[in-house]
Length: 122
Image 1: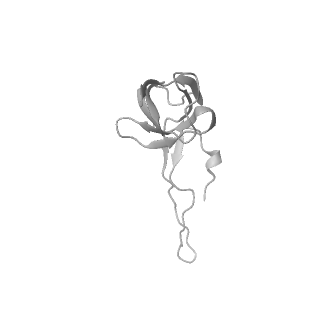
Image 2: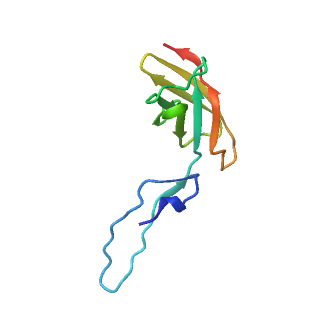
Image 3: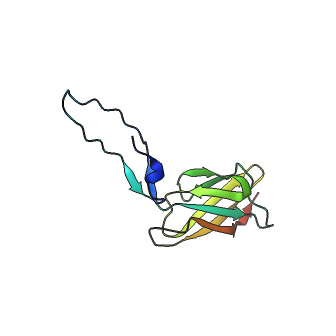
């Protein structure tokens, strides 16, 4: 077992516990799949200045994973591409697109925004 609290912010891990049974009097090596990932808390507002609704889904384009918006339009995004990452955000009755600037450095700012989500879709 490892404690993910001790990992850096740019690390992702699938599981923190693995069950192993070594032979009597022996030890075992256990590998945990820790990988680096560009991650950030992105604050997104609609074109009228209101935060995107709680529960809105954000998808990294073209076919990346989905994330859910929380309070104040905050969305924790992982696996961001360096450069410009396109994000499509949708909610009941609306949606929009965002071109998210992502620094090329390995460690990016912990919080980005608020950014205005343009290109409204209804």
